[in-house]
Image (cartoon, rainbow, N blue to C red):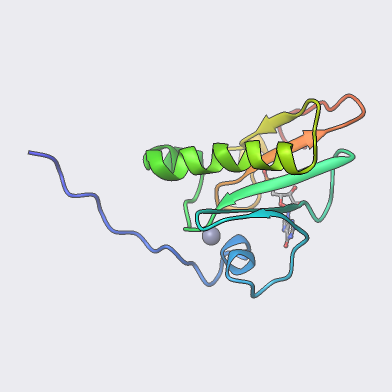
Length: 123
Ligand code: 5GP
Ligand code: ZN
């Protein structure tokens, strides 16, 4: 018998990315659908720097990866960003944990492109 999945909040009023997904905080949106939102990073670390978030709240990629449908939707969102911006190449990063540099505890994929993108922990 399968264990019931514990319920968790899909909207955290203290989470900036939940608030962006709800339209409460403005963002420069690149792609949007029912499951994900993609918007430009407020402090870009590359000429193209877009964040792809699931609309429901997941703290990080560990939680996101436990929900295969939402995880696939984020990857489809990465693909949609690459299509929308006609990116010939790009780097995708999921920081997990403060020591990795994760500062926003709502799972997000960074999509970076242009000028020899390098990414190190804590950037
Ligand atoms: P992390 O460091 O958690 O992997 O990435 C969080 C990213 O979110 C950072 O690159 C930061 O610049 C970006 N960020 C934080 N707050 C906001 C915001 O309110 N709007 C936008 N567009 N980006 C944000
Ligand atoms: Zn959130």
